[in-house]
Each structure stands twice: as structure tokens, then as C-alpha cells.
Image 1 (tube, helix red, strand yellow):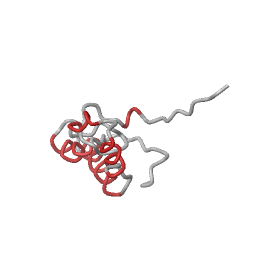
Image 2 (image 1 turned 180 degrees about the vertical axis):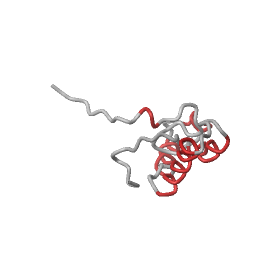
Image 3 (image 1 turned 135 degrees about the vertical axis):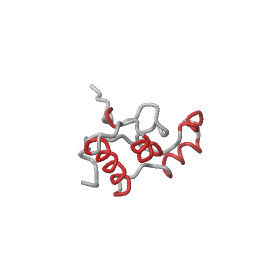
Image 4 (image 1 turned 45 degrees about the vertical axis):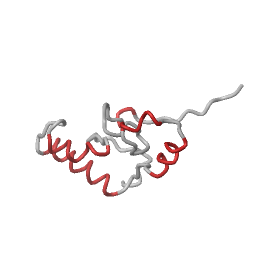
Length: 100
């Protein structure tokens, strides 16, 4: 019997209708029609999301705005921090996160 290895992602970590629909790379939605083409495959590697301190600081600042300063998730202050990379202000940390 063969088993299929399945990759799992946290659904809560994907922003619906975001600027970058892929949870692994920063390819904008405008380039989605190029999916599967050789150039797109190269862009997936060059535009890969990195789990770095800058990204985490944006998420942390958005969390503070929402949970401490009572801003709405769709407020301009929160959107300015998260929209560019389609991040979400969830209080969920992945066990694969390097910025712990």
C-alpha cells in the first residue's frame, strides 16, 4: 500500500483576498495568470516569504493595534502594516517559525 505525503498549512494563516494569495511567496495577485510557467517558478524562489524579524515586527505592531488599542482589523492603521505582504494579525505562532 502506498502512502501519499501531504503538506499541511494553517488555514488561519492565509489572508482571504489579499495582495499575495500564496502563503509561501510574495507573488502579487496580478501575476496569478502566469502560474506554472517557467518564469513563475523562478519568481516563487526569488520572492519567497522569509520568517524574519521585520515581518514579525509588522505582525506584532498590528496585534498591538488590534488587541491593545482597540483598532478594527480592517482599519487603515492595521491595513497599512499588513496589506502589502497579505499578513494577518493572528495570535497563532507556527512551530516552524524561526522568530520565537
